Length: 129
Image 1 (tube, rainbow, N blue to C red):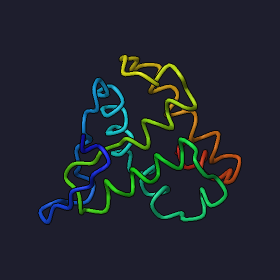
Image 2: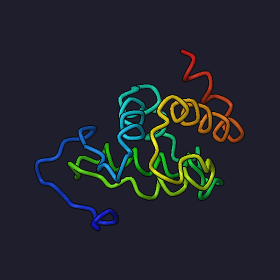
Image 3: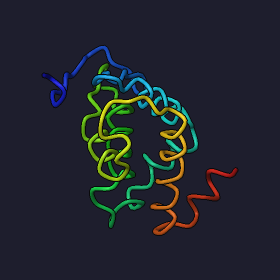
């Protein structure tokens, strides 16, 4: 499989990238695309390079890495395999490819806030504005 491959596309635009469906991950991809279009969250994650400086191998760190790829403007398709793997490690109900969309949205919205808040309390103020 080509899940680990990255294909550079000269015609790609920043913020416009599809996420490859790895089995039954359309629920995850749809939720991530919604978050990728939240202007305040994107701005904070892309401009604040110190937000996750001390957090490694977390869901938030993998989300930020995926977000950066989407907004680089180099890729039209991205394989979110590292995000999916860490999601399954922290939340075993996502280890396989069952669809649990609502639960995914609750986790993906809550987890980064808690992890980032531990390092940067101003982040929550950004989301509530």
